[in-house]
Figure (tube, rainbow, N blue to C red):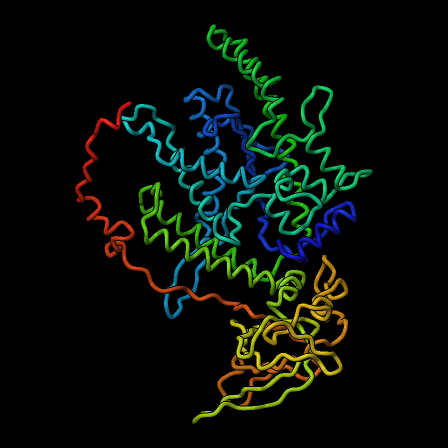
Amino acid sequence: MSLMNVLARAEAVAAGRAVPAATVRHRRIAERPLVLVPLTTAGEAGAPLGAMVGTDRAEPTLLVVPQPLDRELRFAFFAGLAAAVLPVVDAYADEVETEPATKNREEVEVCADAPQIVVPNSAALDYVRLLGRSTRYLRTVEDPDAPHPVPVPVPLLGRWLTHYAERARTPGSSLLVAMTELLTRHWATGQSAMEDQHLGALLGWIDPPDGLDGGSAAARAQTGRGPDGLLLSPPAGPATDPVFDNRVLAPALERYDAARSAGATGPMRVAEADVRRLVASQLRPTWDDVWHGVDLLRALPEGAHVEERWKRDRWSFTGHRDRLRAGEPPQPRRDDAVTAAQKLAGRETAQARLYAQEALDDPLVMAARRLAGEAFTGTVLSVEMTWSEGRRPMPRPLLTLTTPDLPQADPATRAYRALPGAKSAQTAEVVSLTPAPGVPAQRGAGGAPAEGPSAAGGGPAAADVPPAAGPAPAAEPQSGPLWQVVVRLTGGMGTGKTPREGSVPEPGDRVTFTLFAHDQRGGPALPEAEATPWTHGGPPQARETAVPEAPDTATAEDFL
C-alpha cells in the first residue's frame, strides 16, 4: 500500500466518508453492461443456488435451483444462464469494423464493441471462472453415449465464461470486472481491504445515506439485521448468510424435497415458489448495489487511455469468436509451457502499461509516483541548445528545471515525457540533481540526497495535488523550488538538425518527466511447442510416447 493510499484512508476516517483515489475513471463502463449476481450453496462450491442476470436493472432474469444437489436441476440452471448470456454475446459478434493494413498486418475485421460482464466482487469473479471450467467439457444431448447429457448451449456458455475469466487476469481489462475492485480503485475508504469486499459496506463509505457517516453505514450493511433476524444487506455473492441458510433456506428446501418425494404437484410448486422468493430476497439488494456502483463510476470522466485498452479487449473478444466459429476444441485444463509463458509475459507487459497509463491520465496517480521518486514535475528555468557529435549532429538540448520533487535518479538515468499528439514518449536522460540555489544540501550515505525535511516537504503536498473530481488544472501550485534538475532531451524532436516545433519546452513551461517507460516492449521470442525443452515437459510427441516410470517396489515398511 502506497503512502498516498494510507493518507487517503486516514482522511476518509477523519471525514467520515470515502475520499477520491482518482480524478478520472480508469476502466470502461459499457452503455449496457451485463450484470451477473451469482449465489452458491454453502459448502458446495459447484452447486449453484441461484443468480440474477440481465442488462436491464428494472427487469432482471431470476434463476433459482430449488434443490442444488440435484444434477438435473443444476443443468437446467446452466441452460437458463446460457439463454440469458449467449444472446447478449451474439448481439456483438457480427457488428464489425475494418482495421486498415499496417506494415506487419493485413487489413482485418474486429468487433466494433464487446459485451461487458459486471459481478459484485472478486469472489463472484472466481465463481464465474469455476462455472466456465465445470461446464465447457460437458457432453450434450447430441451425443448419444453421454451418460448425463446437458442442453446444447451449456458447453458454449462454459467456453465464453472461461475466456472472460482468463481475460480478467490481464491488468486493465474491462471485459469481466468486479464492482468492488472498480470502486476501491477510484475511492479510498476508512476500512480494511478485506471489508472493502463487501459491496454494501463499500457503498456505505462512498455514498452514505442521509443521517449516517461512512463508518456507521458500513457497519449497518455488514451486521444490521431486521426483525426476522436476517441481514439488511446480504453478502454480495456468491456466499450466503449462515443465519439465512439455517433458519430460512434449509426448511424451505426440506419442504420442497418432501413434496417432490410425495409426488404432490401442487405443494411442490408452492414450495418451489417459496425457495424462489427467498433466493430473490438475497439477490435483489446486491443487484441494486451493483447498479448503484455503475452510476457512481459513470459520473467520473473516462481516462484518455481507457479506449486503447478496451480496443485490446475487443481484439480478445474477436479472437475467441473466430476460434469458436472455426470449430476449435475447448480451452485445455492446463496450458502447455509455451502458452503459459506467453500468458505470463502478456500480463506482465499489460501491468507495466497500465502502471504508466494511469499515471499519465490522472494527476492524482502521478502525485503518488512523484512522492515515490518515480517522476518529477518542475518549471523550466533555461534551455541550452546542444548537438550530438558525429557525422550527422542531432539536437540534444539541456533543460534546467526547479522542482519540489525528489526524483530517485542517478546521472544518465533515462527519463520520459509525454508529448501531445505523439505516438510515443519523448526520451531524455538526467544529467545532474542538485539542491536549488539558497537551499542547504542534505546528503545521505554515499552522497545521495537524504530523505530529510526537504525531501518530505518536496513531495506533492496537499496543495500540490489537484482536486479529486473534474479535469486537472493546467498548472498546479508549487510550494517552492527545492531541487534543480538538468535533463538532456535525446529524442522526440524529429530527424532534422532543428528540433520540431513544440518538441522542446521554453523557459517558464511546466513539464513532467517520469522515470518509467510509457510504452512497453515485448520480451524475447519463445520456442515453438514442438521445440519445448525437456525442463518444461519436452515436445508434445515425446510426452505422448514416453514410457511411464515404474513405481517403486512395495516393501514391508510400506505396511503397518
